[in-house]
Length: 396
Ligand code: APR
Ligand code: PHB
Image 1 (tube, rainbow, N blue to C red):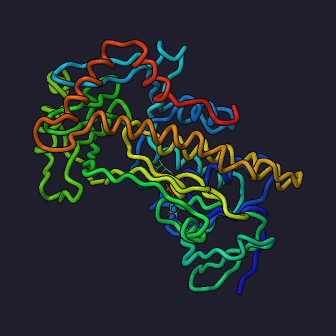
Image 2: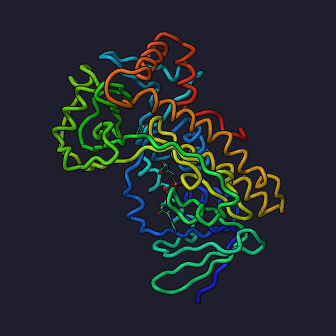
Image 3: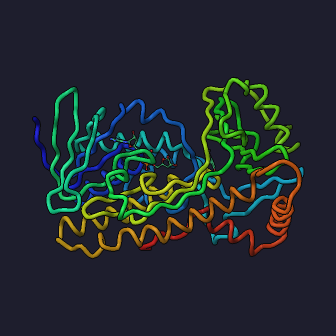
């Protein structure tokens, strides 16, 4: 049995785990990252692509913003489409000069993987059967298998950055954890295609046939979504049907500028809001999707992961280097305050923009009223804008 030791054992090499590893390495704290899949698998996963101003600033600050600055697309506004009309929300003007950056999570994950390589700090891909031991005591450790061989990794702290289906949250006793969940009765069918985007900025559309979103990865690669049934079968959606549906839902202006092309990726994702409380049990910490899931409306998932990890890195650094537990004691409450605001915002946007049932109802009238209020009220637009570009970090 191979035995190792480190200060912080990190489970998961998605954006949360890799960024935490990077921040701790910069602070002089030793880490080992264990990831169940291969690097190629992790880097190929297609996820959202909008970075909040605070995420962009953090990446710049820690020297990881180079490629993002060259290849990402800064956006100063976002569009809402409804009833055949399109309204631009002036993010920049309404927030005193803040923007978002359109840069795929896939690209950010590659940048973080390269930074890990450059740091020389260890990362074990294809680590199987990771299990957590002694998290409520003084000497926690992980067990896992690599190439069929049993290994242990002793540590001072464990960071579970292992996503919505990881081992971290499952290892917390049910008596200490409380969960909150909302499952939405639909999914998003996403399509990626090498065609120029149909608009300069994103379009979120509410339509009687269902929600649609026009997004992008670059000037020559587009990402689109349509609301679909939760158990939708991809066979039912040949590319032509998706393009036709997008043209109807996104409105005539977008349709006129839409370039169609073969999909290079197509998938259905369910929509869910989920929060686990607390995000800490003894020496085990949950960060990113391990602790909370948001529906993609508003693109908060990755940004929340970044804000958790920022707080966790500071807390673990103080604990490891100064023996000061005050920040780890506050980790869960500090994170959750911001998490719930993003959960609220993505729930609100989901609620506002989707079709929830057939025909007209009390709810559809309220949606119409809210959209019409939003289009006519600067105060309402400002509330959307300040959430969309990202609320301040909890410790800022
Ligand atoms: N052992 C080792 N690794 C694991 C285990 C396990 N038992 N379980 C999960 N993992 C790995 C997964 O393979 C994945 O690479 O943990 C990683 C978790 O990464 P993400 O799911 O990307 O989660 P996170 O890093 O928190 O990033 C959050 O991803 O899902 C989006 O919307 C979300 O954008 C947000 C971001
Ligand atoms: C995306 O580009 O994939 C994207 C953008 C905005 C969202 C969700 C997804 O709200």
